[in-house]
Length: 199
Image (cartoon, rainbow, N blue to C red; front, side, top):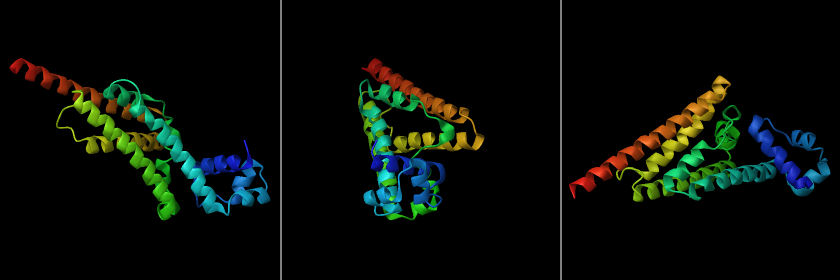
């Protein structure tokens, strides 16, 4: 791994651990062993490094959310994405950025975070719309609303897990989201069966 990638990776870790305000270029150099000359050869300063590091982190998030567009039925894809391992006590690498005032007040940094969530929500909405079209979810489901509900369940699962210092609140939140989808799906199939019997 080159010096630039080392610096970016270390900055991403430090942003996650302590936020932007509590992270200095000296901290990044100490974690990587990369010298000051090399750091400023690759980056004009801390802000440019933070932008690249946060962009890399959000790129990872949007890569994972591609599970919502993978193989299987729309409902299967949504359940597979919900069921992927999530270390709750570590928190969401992207969602936690909204807890840091210095990130929220920085137009460039908060735009990176907002764009990542827009990608996530867009993928949720498309999967939900496809599930409605396939008869897996009720026809009166509003994709944008359900997408935000499911995203909020995951983010709040992280918050609850961190507050309790244990994984179970995250696992419980995910079980609840899966139960919500199962109940909605059962309702859709029951309505379809009734319509079929009426024909």
